[in-house]
Amino acid sequence: MARLAKALAGDGPAISLTSIASTHVPSRIALVVATSGSTASAKEVGLSAGAILTSAKSTNAYLNASSGQVWSLLLPLTHIAGLNVLVRSLELGTTPLDLREHSGKYPYADFTAIVPTQLFRALNGDSDLLEHLLSAKAVLVGGAALDAKLREQANTAGIKVIESYGMTETCGGCVYDGMPLANTQIEINEAGLIRISTGSLAATYVNDADGWNDLVRDGFFQTSDMGELRDGKLIITGRSDDVIITGGENISLTQVEKIIHETFTGVQCAAFAIADTQWGQALHLAIAGPVQPDQSAINEYLSSHISMAAKIKKFIYVDELPRTALDKIDRPKLTAMAQGDSR
Image 1: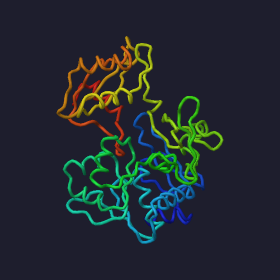
Image 2: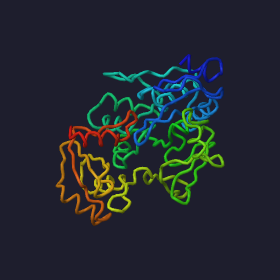
Image 3: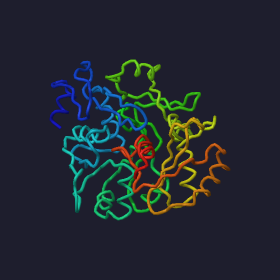
Image 4: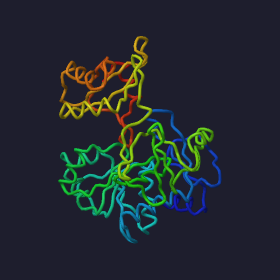
């Protein structure tokens, strides 16, 4: 907290709590955070003090948080979502409750931030975490898509859930429950991709300035997420970088997963692809947990609702789906598991 406060005030060097190659950054950079690299090589995101503080102030204002109120820290500090809890606490003049390794009864906190897996665990057996979330004035849920059924379950239980959308490049969440925060604007380009202009936008990729410049036009950052604006509300529909070409057809891995989740109750699955001489990219599916539906039934449904090219070429069964620290499916890890034919 002290190092972060000095970096934000310009009284100390920039800091990074993630593994990065860079040793020097431009003077405007206060914090460097490496992206998870779940679908591509990691980028070292350079964030200015102004962007970081804008993000924290916007979130606290959205939540009507006031001086002296307390956040709990349940996320890793190697990611922007965890670091944001520290900065929001600095803005409130408090120190967050570090509950990352906590067990047993949790102390009270006014606000907290979690990923969907933590919400699932709270609603499915972790009574101590559930009590902690129920007592909070607001619970931000981000890092990965929040399943509609899981949110409904949380609402029914009485948890005050706010779905957060953003990325390291925007200092984390800048859209809450589909609505942009102050100083944030959303556009959808002709390809259906989300573009974001925000006061919390990063300054550069420290290790790839040219790559950053390619993504920022007219003050808007070009994301890889696809979405729609309905009555001013942002709806995330998928990711452009999860589209594979198999048998000459474009297939969205997110769409494959969505159809299976909606059709086969209780199935935990993740779609991924492996280079293949016949198909170009062969569609694979990993299934975790006890519910294992009939493979032919899955393929028949995918064929009729997407196309014949959407048939799964190989199924693998795992104990748990591999995820990044912020709850995104780790598709490269699944590819490695499938190629190694290991659980």
